[in-house]
Image (tube, rainbow, N blue to C red; front, side, top):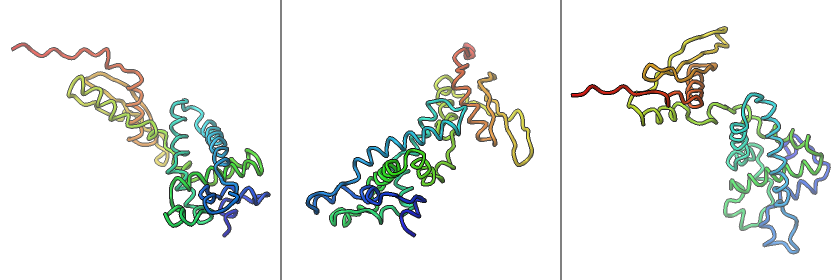
Length: 235
């Protein structure tokens, strides 16, 4: 299977594809130095950010800007792009100097991530933004499908417990207060309390996500700030 088949894209200009796969190390062996992929990487980086931002904007219409930014960062990170490049065997297609190849250049994360972005830039130059977006969503399909906004927001339960235990050693308590929907599509609602005070509630498709949502709501409401700890009895 050719690289174009693995990318699910047929280049009109093979020159663009070759440039996208040309590592800058070639300049140490070939004179005059051939065009390398650094400029395409620069362009592809911008196209990648725009395409992913647009996809996330439409996919998660109720999520705020801060979380959208975290989700995007997880998709455009160097390790994620390198892993996606490995799936389509991009490393074996790179044009490298003998020195770069002998030092493991075909499997180096930085080279693979850069090649991913340069391929995106090449598709953009070859056919435009829509085609580039289609290639991006194809290459990152499994990573996009596994996105979990609750994980991207961080450990809300741990953060809440850490804050409360600075006030009192008592831990927050999570209780499921409602379950609804058919067995294959249940929705759980959870309430988090602390020292007999309700701090927040949230819902999710399972108990864990409902607890996370409740902790997140509590962190936003900060109702514990109005709590007055009980005065210990005098001896």
